[in-house]
Length: 173
Image (cartoon, rainbow, N blue to C red):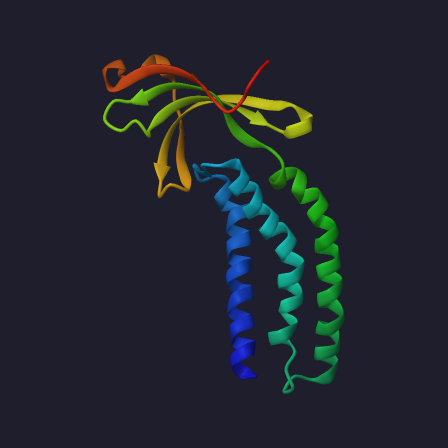
């Protein structure tokens, strides 16, 4: 039983660490998912897993050596916190669950590494339209993420780039 409690403890602590990082510091790091489907799937797991992870803390916070009142308080407060978090997810979904940067146009490809591109992107909010525009240099990392760096195309060294002007993922009629 002790081993199972330790496993639950480390799984929930790891999950909380990833969730807290993803929704705080991770928002300022210029590393983004290459595919917006993966990003949405990741945040769906984080947001929907938080109440479950909170409930899993019961497996390792309730202990026989604690006073009975403490275990009862933990047993009551933990489901209440999980319930509040469940309803809070609805509001968090609007911040993290919707929207993604989508390539409107691939403007340049790097001559040495064609996977490194300069793209014109729109912030796609689904049914809510488009929320912003940016020009970024995208450098792939491990085939799953991009290092996104805002760039001014007037200041790049044109001899390092090939003008391609390909259509991106957004198809306008």
